[in-house]
Each structure stands twice: as C-alpha cells, then as structure tokens.
Image 1 (cartoon, rainbow, N blue to C red):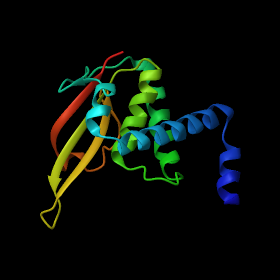
Image 2: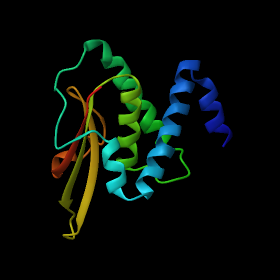
Image 3: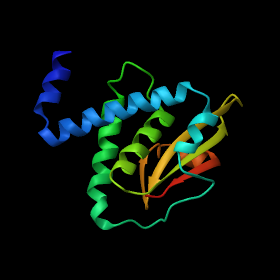
Length: 147
C-alpha cells in the first residue's frame, strides 16, 4: 500500500488530477454497468454510427494521457474495471474535453466455444482502450459520441 501511495505522490499535479478523474469515471461506468443496458444506451451516443477516422493533431497528447490514466487507474479499483467499464469511462472523459469517440461492442467465441464479449473505444485513428485482441471480435454494436 505504501508503494502505491508513494507512486501516486511522485506524479505531477496534472497527472494526479487525471488519475482521480479516471478513477471517478471508472466508478461511474461500473455503476452504469449494473443497471439495465437499455437505460444506458441513450448516454452512449448515436447507435450504429461512427465518428471520423481523422482527429485534430492537437488532441493526440490528450488521447494518450487519457488512455494511460484509464489503464493505470483501472488496476487500482476495488470494483471490476474491465473493457466495458474502461470504454465508457474513456468516452466520458473525451466527451468532457469535446473530443469525438466511437465505442464498439463485439462478440467472439473463446477456445471452448463459449460466447465472449469485448468493448473498445476509438477516437480518430487512435484506440484509447480495448485494442488488445479486438481483431478477434465481430462488431455487433457501435455508438458515436459527436461533440
């Protein structure tokens, strides 16, 4: 625990704020995952639409910082913070900064033939969360968040 606190204290003020924001959005996204998905869908954006593959080059640094913060904060949550929770949290952080994004939901079969699901988020040409293994999944739904 002391190592975690020491690590957090070693970050700059801006990084600390971003990590706290990430943790907060992860908690909010985890709450959203606990309610019926039909009630969450309206907040995710335009159904079955995508945002542009281009982005303002000025956003590249922000996208990287958000991705890094989400991944780091998700390691330290006391609640489940897997792909859908990370994707929703990232989408909300991007929305706050008026940066477009698309959330993808996909399904596939695992080695045992069981149906599995995955979520990831893209902004412009960059994948913010969930890019690991996404090529295995067939997109079944997508949500464009235009700002």
